[in-house]
Image (cartoon, rainbow, N blue to C red; front, side, top):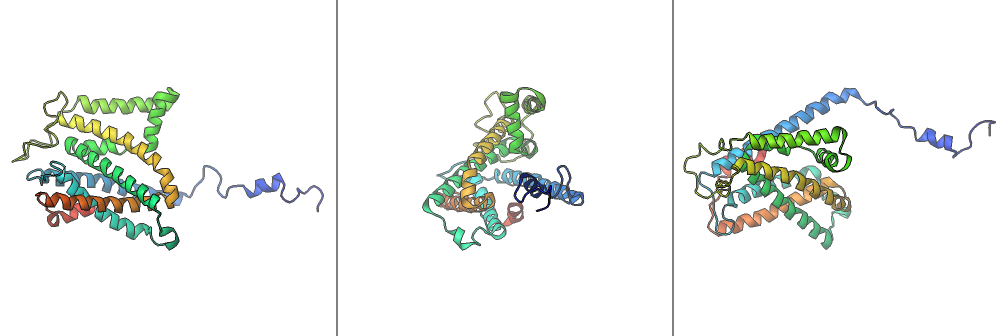
Length: 286
């Protein structure tokens, strides 16, 4: 051994091996424009699909498929069943959750947890779509585009740190919601619908002191925090199943099958079928 050289396995040797390949704060800037472009495209398609879905639901209100079992929820259930089935098929093809046969086998407990995850997802999406019907696509995009870590920062700013940038961000978020509630006419999305049914999601709140769109805004805000808590509790299930991508693929397919069963029950109860073939591009894009 050379004099003055650190022994093999020493702290100096370990520190050299643990040195990161790229120094902190440096990254490959050549890939940054591609990431930004992909992010902008994904966000644009997501916002555009919200407008397409709202237009489809508004056209469906002209002659809503009201069944004896689900009543006024028939339109939302039938629409969501088609969207989830198409999404589940795309997830299975892209994510390939059954590619590894050793990990493809699911126990009864895991199947039950996936079923529970799918049911909670269905409830969330139905409530979100009712909020979309009430307040329109523009407000929905503004409110529903916040990430979970942004909401976590807002909550920590109000209840934990109570100072600094998080608190300022929380105050601005609350101010924006109040602006939407106070300066809202609430009637722009339902004036030009001839033959509007007497019973609709808005009819339950038309007689209250809040407009229908204001109620929709509150519903969407509650959906944000509901989704944040739901995804936090679903992390353990994602770890047990091999990742969040596999969980989302299996849960989306399961929710689509559950909604398809509800779709058939709704049709047998006397409900009309939504115009699927004439709107297949809209539903597939969504």
